Image (cartoon, rainbow, N blue to C red; front, side, top):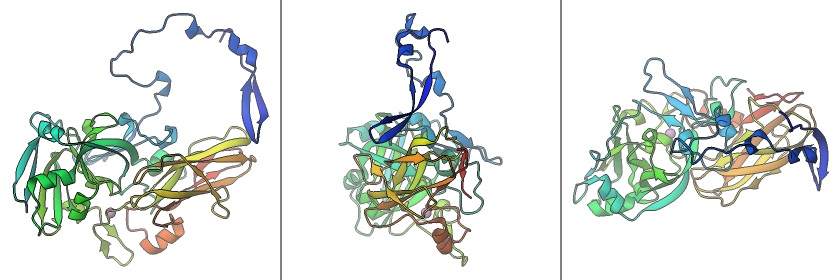
Amino acid sequence: MAGFSVTRRRGILAGAVTLLSGQRAGAQEDAPPWMRQQGSPVTSPPYGVPSKFEQNVIRRARVAVKFPSASSSGTPLQDLHGIITPNGLHYERHHAGVPGVDPAEHRLLIHGLVDRPLIFTIDDILRFPSVSQIHFLECSGNTPEFRDPKPDWTPQDTHGLLSCCEWTGVPLSTLLAEVGVQPSARWVLAEGADAAAMSRSVPIEKAWDDAIVAYAQNGERLRPEQGYPLRLFLPGFEGNMSIKWLRRLKLGDQPFQTREETSKYTDLMPDGKARQFTFIMEAKSVITRPAGGQQLRDPGFHEITGLAWSGRGRIRRVEVSTDGGTSWRTASLQEPVLPKCLTRFRLPWTWDGGPAALRSRAIDDTGYVQPPREALVDVRGINSGYHFNAQQTWQVAQGGAVSNAV
Ligand code: CO
């Protein structure tokens, strides 16, 4: 590139931190090509898209061969910064594809053990007092590591069914007050308007607590793949319970025993019994850089960074090990630390160029400590595909290639 020569220089010491490289300052005085012509006017298309140089930052799909509409796609956690997932990168998991719901035709029915069964239009929902809350959403099938983890997996492969957005909507408690809940009601059936009529039973305590009926995500209306025009959102609960394309809430005195809480989303234990209604996503964390699929270039300073979260509340502390769990250091947490929300952690690290095993563990404000893999498998066995929240280890090889430790 004419007039833009770069000389890399190693090992500049700035305070306590050894920076990796610098550029010869004089080179920056020559204008690069994009300074020598006018740029484009206001961006086109009118709804902005990322730079063409970021085209590899995309969701990656796992399409089910037999039923392509029952598929998932993962968030590229290794390429993201801070705690917010952009709407175009939120993970997906559909049981019968994405329905093309017309908001003018869509209705929400609330019935069952209520004083006044009511049908709401989207305009009705938009008239209620609104709230905005930043929360993670995680599929209970995230981290498919119980049985056969693969060495070439990246954070997107191991933890990509995890995202975090600001959700705006109406507290479910407001709608329940509107219909008048009868004292015998203990459970709420939530049903989606997709071809699976995806349905789950929600305990009434959760419905009164922090559940919202959401219509917006990161400042704009929900994406179709996130339930447009209306979804249930249950902070801290397994993702599939936050029913998308929400069309019906029915109050009852017992759980409704739907397909997705009997044959699926139950946890098969080593003794052959299955745990049912395991709603809460326990404390968990993952280092997103350096991580599987990446290559450390030079020995010296590297920031270790990642994400921690708990369905029970706030993250109290994150500890990071570079020797596979023998010794631990406390990472710094990005403020604000919000309940049932991703928390970004960071730790400065000087890599000596040799092998290392990078691992993190989250501690939430109940005092719960994210377990090592062996401890989790001891209790849970390897029958289950759900709620795998063990510590994740990335193996750094001599030379800097990083892989999933299996
Ligand atoms: Co569960």
